[in-house]
Length: 242
Figure 1 (tube, rainbow, N blue to C red):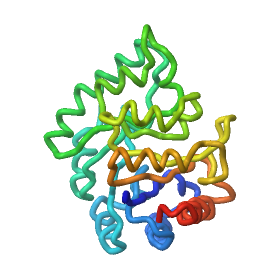
Figure 2: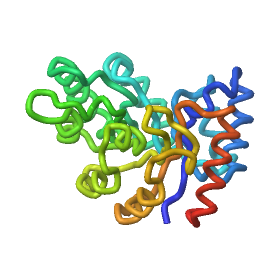
Figure 3: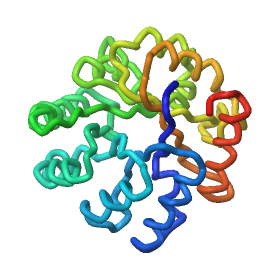
């Protein structure tokens, strides 16, 4: 059975200082998570973050980076991830509305992907729903998947009007990680079990994919990150996934 990690972007409004971020990591562990996905370091140095994660027994499963960081600060990115022992980076977001957008993205990938691979780090792409628009004769996500393995955000696949479990199985060879995320049909993410996404069927499909990690995320937690995440973990226990 896959282990669960939390995308820490979910908790971005729950801390203001490095000390508060460090304390928050203990709350994440207490909720039952075995790992985290980073969206920044919370103001901690790589060494401080590595020490805190080790102290709590949390794995750094993946990290989100923007294309400009990969293009302009790649050596810094590599050094940080090697220090914390994180072997996957996902491009968090990229424009994908035109052939020019994709050309620019692929130029960054062509530069960064080999250097990251040499450093023992795999580069992935994290989708939203805008990549499901057709650019030229093919959806942008299909073009992206020829250049990069995928970290699939299952809510945004749902928001794009796809049958999520079927889409996952059709792309199983390209998928390395999943964001397990619920939400409604109006582009509002929510806690697991509180939306309209087919979470249980997605979890069943994830077992067939044989993934080691599933990542919980909510872009807009209510009323706050920890409360929202606690409800998601309670749902996973209710359906027998924890």
